[in-house]
View 1: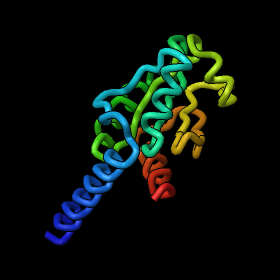
View 2: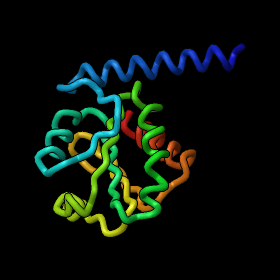
View 3: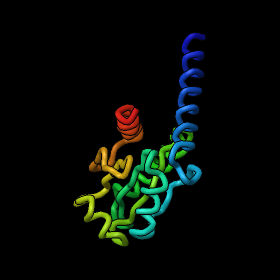
View 4: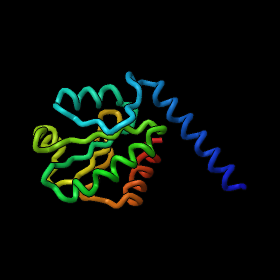
Length: 144
């Protein structure tokens, strides 16, 4: 029972933190799906609108096998972090080369973590779901 109570308390704290984050500085509601970045202007709008949230950018390409394997993992994690206000995005590097170059993405998949308009972490290569979840949790912990 004690573990269940702690889990409930932790979830309540997470929801409270998400509500605070959504209310403080976020101009838009938290998207309930992964955002496909379509242009530099779109990328800049996301970074500005959600500057107080953690934004994760999955750099990928259609021809990249590991990128395709990581896609379903990334999508499922987006659902798990929705209540924490984490914004999950995808960037096709073949169609948005300028953004990839700006962040010096030289290999894919590369995942960028952005907060307050700054790159706070970079993950190069595909990570299994449990490992990627640990990375997201560690980045969120650093931001608190």
